[in-house]
Length: 140
Image (cartoon, rainbow, N blue to C red):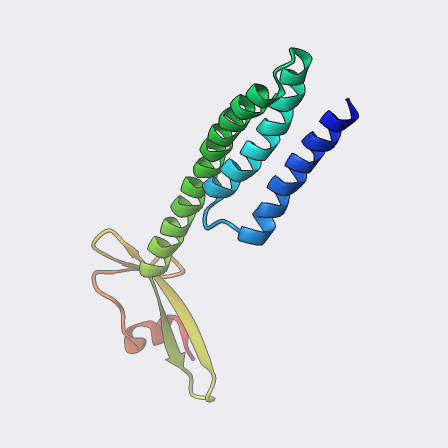
């Protein structure tokens, strides 16, 4: 029994250490690695009850790795969607500098909306507004 516990603990330690030593590029890969290690450990424990520690570890590692990959891959997809949304938002806004008579500068953020641009106060432009067009509203 002690040999079994030591072997299982060693397997888990090696799997978790591998994550930090080798690293992974995606959360899917990290999930697969952690899931494999945890699954192998749990599988070994369950398999040991029936006298089949090695088989339990192999099956547990495979199931854990697959499950870990699926969970990590979904996290990767969510992160990618958030990055794409952020890029879309950045691409649909412009900052226009308004130079005031006292030398100060006010930045006005206009947002692309359909076929035109909307200002911060809800005003509408059918083209990207110029500083001269925005100065009467936002400058002094």
